[in-house]
Length: 451
Image 1 (cartoon, rainbow, N blue to C red):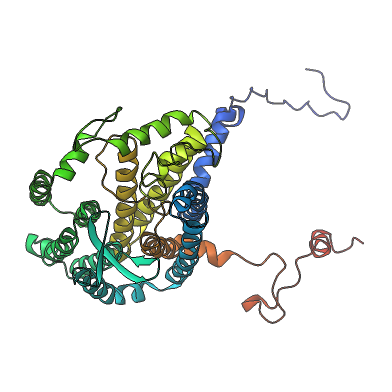
Image 2 (image 1 turned 180 degrees about the vertical axis):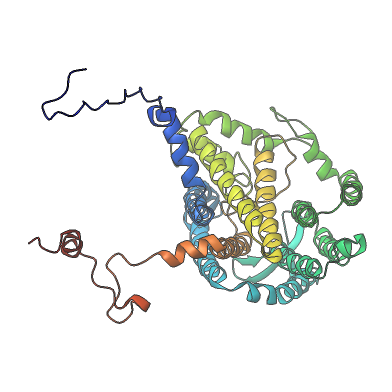
């Protein structure tokens, strides 16, 4: 082998092998999936989903309430923006409640459980007092506050059951009593039946179904055995069948499932059929905001129970799928908060709120689509009604507080620093923070002898 000019043997260089192809870098879909999965798993994802999703639902609901209620207001010789102004006022008050609930510590939420339950039971009993309670659409579940303002105490019963039930189950879990079936059922089930009885005295079966769903959600989170869970479900099912069979109005609503043409007789299915007509005429992108035809007296309760139908007519399939996606994101975030916490009260409360909002949305949208009987429940955060909006926004504040209270979320929030630094003397153990300007970064990047 010939030597080099220096007299040393030539250096043997290793032959480079071709690098193996990296699918994660070359495949754009793989990179997009990795980034989305990484962003989805961040500590503050649930916080942003709850806050952003709920605010988008409320804002879109205000727009649709204004659009869907104009004709109804004019038919009642009222200004076209009458219902919108009342809903906007309720949203402003609910925003304050949401902010207060999101900043309250968990101990204060637990302390408010019993006062809220006592107040809800008192108001729900007050509804049945002659001269105080009033009937709306055949249901005796309202209290007049003077003028055009009314309140439905049963809506606050949902929040009361969530807070009180979560506090009760958390205390029993801390004492390791949930392994016994009697401690799992008593007094949760009797108090829930008390609330259901007060609601059914007014004839509002839709709200009773939501409270039953919250009860089952709490039992499920508590780890109720299958036999116990099936037993409570069987009792609730038997009572539900009896209540439906003994009411011609409820039987008529049950007969309207899947109806596509109006009928004659007690079950004319007028509302259900025109809700389908509204959705069918919307097409892909709708007829345009404010251009609904069914709200001109054809579709009853266009701005309350059937606002989803008007949304489908004016915003089309794209609008309805957007609403469904927002509720799905809200439900996922609630489940994530309930699944990642170590606090039993937070787990039960977050699960109860998620069950409440998800079940009510499914029942309302299912009725509009003709898949479920019309239960007369509003779409959460979306339909007109201050009595439903206020406790729901407080419950959203609960979820936001719980999402912020996760250990990883607290650490992520604590690591946040102002973009331009702090004032002098407020920098902690490392001394005062200086202004984080471009000149400061450039001077740090230079070497000691460079100018």
